[in-house]
Structure formats: C-alpha cells, structure tokens
Length: 285
Image (cartoon, rainbow, N blue to C red; front, top):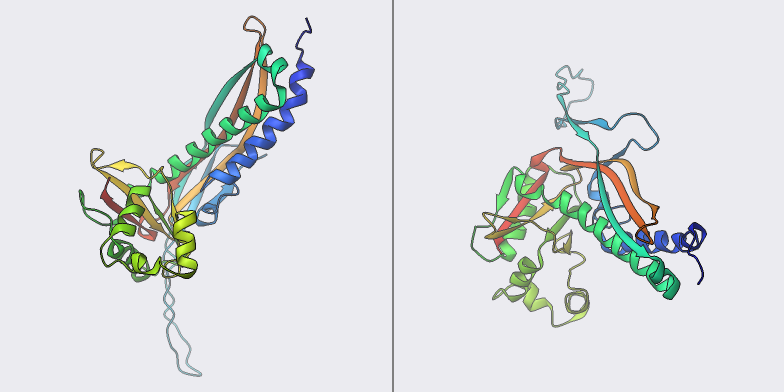
C-alpha cells in the first residue's frame, strides 16, 4: 500500500489555497476583495512590529465665503482623537485523512479550500456587522418590518451629518424581503421592467438605490434579545479595520491519526471609528 508523505499533501496545498482565496473573494462582503472593503478604513501592520495601531479621527471643517482682499483670521481648530485597534488571531481548521487523499485528491483539496474560505469570510463579515447596532443613530422600530422609508431615513440622516458619500446599505435577507413585499413600495412597482427587475429577480440585490449601494447579507446581527435584525447604511468613515496578517494556510502531520491538519488563520481587528458616520437599521427579524 502506498504511504502518504508530506510531498503528497504539498501537491494539493496550492489547490487548497487557491480555492480558499477564491471563495473568500467571491463570498465575503468586507474581507479582501469583497465589495464592501472600500467602505472600511483599512490599515495594515503586515511585516511590521506590533499588533496595535491608532486610527486618528478628526472634526469636520466648514468652508466660508470671504471678500476679495480680506485677510481671513478665524481658523478652525483641528480637533483630533483616536481609536486604538489591537489585532487578534482567528482560525478555521479541517482534517484530511490519508484515505481521503489517496481516494480523491483534487476533490478533497477543493472542498477543503472552499470550506476554509467560507468560514473565514463569514468570520470577517460577522465581526464587522456586529458593530452595526452600536452606531450612534438608529432608524426603524423593534418588532416592525423594514420599510423603504427606513432606508431613505438612514440615507438622509447620513447626508445631514455631512458624511461623505457614496454610502453602502447592508440589509439582512428578511429586511430585504420586507422591502420587496411592502405595499406601494417603489421597489415593488419597479420590478416589472428593466434593470431593476433583472437585479431583484436574479441577483436578489439592488446595485444602486438613490445613489446608495445596497447588498443583502445573512450576517446582519440579531439584536433586541434576538427579536430584530440590525442592518446599516455606512459612510467609509464609520468603521476601521486593521490587518496583522491576511488569511493564510499551513498544515501539520498527525501520524497517529493518519491525517493532516490544515489550518487557515488571519489576524485582524475591527472597531467603530465614528458612530455618526453610519446609521443602524433595526427592524423585525
């Protein structure tokens, strides 16, 4: 009987890594490659000492009109504060037996990579979305279905706070379902034709709604003693993300088990930087 050696696993490690990274990019909202990543203030300590970084936040300035030739002598003070993020390790692991390797090497590799990638993508997104309910302002009502007006109220509140656009709206599938089934909703009236119908019917999300990117994601957290879901409308100044290292894979032989442990780790931190730069959308679960 052939003996499975380290080299046999090394043959499939590139497949596992490629499948895991592809899965993260395809399924994560906020992980590297996800469409939501640009709505985070992302910093990195990769290859640098330390695991903590300060994210500075600054007060907003106001521009004024001034007459020609007049020396403007009322400067605004630069008010700065900071939020410290400390990266911690995250891990997902699977075990691949010798028998599995010998029986279906490529299929096992792809499946292992896919499952590890899904686990890490879900972890990153859940950690980011857990911050939604802590944002300064909330629209919606506990125990009441999400409405089109809730989304507009959140967008308007961000605009009133002078939050820089564009915005990202993240809703739970139940919240999105509420919008689609809301009587007299503009979404319902729009789905009978054109691009809106295609996106709602086939992609289950609307690419743009009043200039706001809308995505539907199941990791929007339960709140209010699990009675509600918390979505959010975000500016890119609301949340910060710090990488110590991005998702990576290693493996170790367990001889008595006749198997390999394949481990994906990442090290990062996420935190609220400015709670006024995002609006929580809290509605019935």
